[in-house]
Image (cartoon, rainbow, N blue to C red; front, side, top):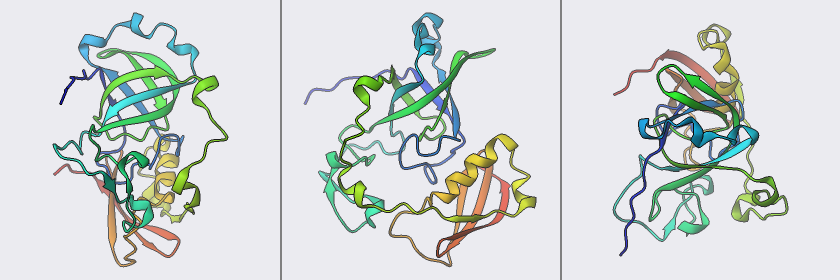
Length: 231
């Protein structure tokens, strides 16, 4: 079997400290912002020349928390309740022969960082903090956008939003720039389809906080907000 080596050119800095709570796809929550920081070898301004003319870019990255030697030809997508198997190539499961992800994000701008040089500001990213990025490409609407495309089994999935009750005294502790994004993340229901225990208390590490919440029916109630401590 032939093997190739990919170079990590950058890493993303996002509010997601763990996999839990990350949107199921890029662009789902545009309020989420993140930074793409290049590795020292690739901090060359000329490599970004012309990129500022594009509104969206593709990020090609690694499911760094899901790298494994073996793989399965079928997977159980959580949104199907964990009971139905589909082919791995008919899914976006991280458990693939090559643990590679692909995300389309909005390019908010290119900024000069005093320590990291040129960095990219993006929105709508579905990547965990520190995720390695292999490549960046411009999004081309004339070729990359297909409004008539069929979404397979995802076309039949309902995605109702939860009603979020976030006590004001707790929400005020979250930096104002992150509040709307956090509310949207909670509303989109991070639970796998097979988890519906209404007595369970969930913890979402986000933006330096550990958000504890409970879901009953279509209502999510935030119970507490504490500084997140990495285990």
